Image (cartoon, rainbow, N blue to C red; front, top):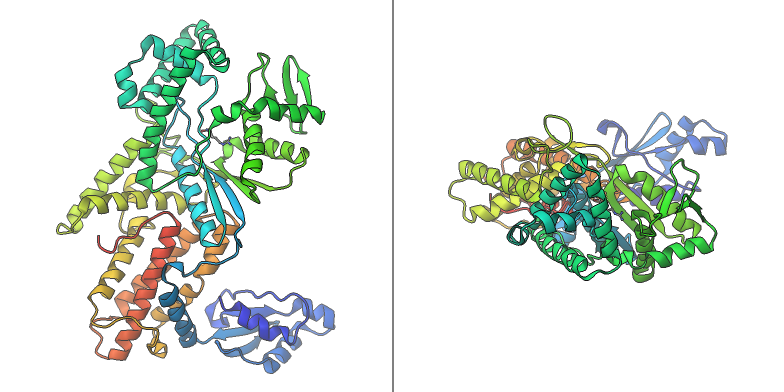
Length: 556
Ligand code: ARG
């Protein structure tokens, strides 16, 4: 946050690019300027240069000491001034504290969630939903415009299976009441039949081919499956606080696949191989754009989708938040679209799977998929139990339980580097103690309660030089690093950078809170300075959690 002031004074003495590092140990200052490159240029030893610079550069207002240590010039920030600056900034900007205009209004398209209809629509899609939501919020907070895209898996051979299965074994009531589960049961049953007798595969193919040709019965069943399923998805998204600008799925773009494939053929990028149309892009696996029976493929639909999106949204960057098992698919897709002459930035933001606490993929005892809705209900019930124990008099217990449960799930995911698999352990993520969402939410509520009950109001006019305790200074120091962490998380598309920082901050805050009493402090000036530190910490936690898609209740 204060690098700029330091770089500005250095620039008066040093030519070229200036980059500061952060010393590993606080006793060496807050920022360091390494003199190695300069030494080569000036043909002097870096130690000598550091000494000269330390003596001759002027002191920025925010700095209290400049020293030379070996080949480095070290800068020590003045904690009181830093706090003064931060308090004014946070109390003034409130929910915008930490934001930037980095994006300058540029548009980023973010595709995430994208569950399938009928096929195992399971809890795993929650990862993409949670990460995508956070990346959308991070972009908006930094001045980008965002379009949120949900690419529903609403096309493909599984619909042939579903139609056959529904016509033979389905129930209209069940479809209406629990569409996702009913369709999934039908899908599982169908696959059991195929295992016994291959002929069922043929029935599915027939029905899908009818669907592709626009057969009325097939189309109307497909539309029904989709309608009911989307309604149910929307309920889950509402609960999670997630919205989308566009729900166009594979079916919508399937209609545009032929035109997209024609473009590839026109550029002579495709060849016919055993009746199918394929593109070879250097990897071992070719990319199939048309099946022998002329039908579209996952790849051709994705190609049509990307071309259409380029046309419709005019984005600079598009992110695909999808599991890493599809890495090859996206690598090929992006390569092909580049070959077609497009130069936007295409990114596969890959993530790992959820694993069950016993190890292995998430599945229920019967080996079936785990449904999002069931997990959400279970988490909410557990959260309610904890709240009833901890705070039996709380008003709106149900509402708070829901917020805590969803916060726990979001944080439980985002705390981990997205590329890794995550063990989904309900009891762990709901704990109020570990590295969890509820821990931070509780810390926030505690800070909010002090501010609410205090007899004075936080004000930037407080005397920050009274915040001398190392616990206080640590909180201030971390506070100064908030916006840089937000921007790091954004630049790397890695929410865990922010989530892990918030835990570090929460721990520092709790240490300060226990060590330095505020309301019981007799000196009114110290009390006021601490109250400001508490309010600014509260605001930081609120903003950080919000960027992770988590609401911070002021009582829980
Ligand atoms: N529906 C797919 C699945 O669940 C994910 C879609 C990923 N996005 C894409 N543009 N291919 O596997």
